[in-house]
Length: 165
Image 1 (cartoon, rainbow, N blue to C red):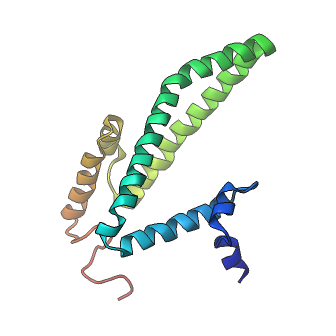
Image 2: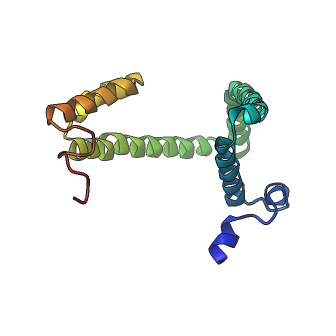
């Protein structure tokens, strides 16, 4: 019963707008609303969906405006903090950037490449150019071609039997 009380909000409005908002309550409430919307005919839910789409467009426009302003804000923060703390701050930030880039490179060229090779038996060299171009569609086709060459009917199953048979 404690799990249910943890997930289900007693008052959804207070769970979001209260002094200490609870994100888990908001997610549960949004999930229930989404399920209810799919179970009601479209003619009834169309006005709500149009309103939600309009809210989405407004939010996307606000985020776009903020993202256009963000580089200037970051530069101002850097100048302000450099003036306050000296050039040593830039050196520490530079090492931080190098560390993050090394970690991301290790993940992409190490973890990602090994998992592609061991899970799909594809050469990571065939997938990396498509990922660099942002062409996920060609990556999908490479995986499908590989499975078709193995003679499997569907991705994830080598034989015609269902898992557990």
